[in-house]
Amino acid sequence: MAEKKVNTEKKIVATAGIYSILRRPIISEKAAKLSESNAIAFEVAANATKEDVARAIEAIYNVKPTKVNIVVTKGKVKTFRGRSTGTQRTVKKAYVSLPADAKLDLSANI
Image (cartoon, rainbow, N blue to C red; front, side, top):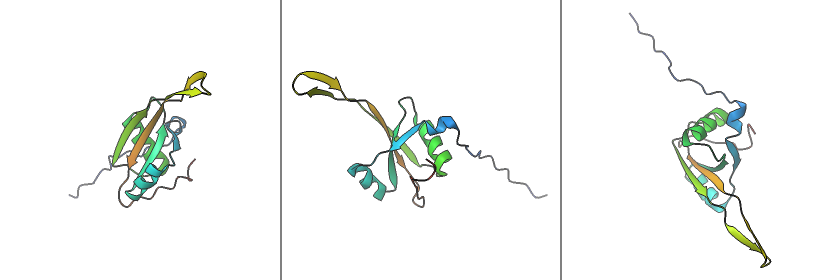
């Protein structure tokens, strides 16, 4: 008897909550350098985990990331005209490594 192979992988469906995890792609010199090594940087929600980011990338762009690193950049205290002080916002960033054959179109699915 021939055995049937059962596909146990579930396709992740993009829901409204998935789109709120990835805020925006980060466009900077560091991000441009990362794109040469097939990686991309995103600003993510403050409560997002590595698993959430990986799931969102897979659902929105149909690419399974190989690695996700998360960095929290604390907001700096700034002085305005020598009088008042304020703080910049705290930003959570995700650096996502993609497979070598993957191409990510950032303008699609926004």
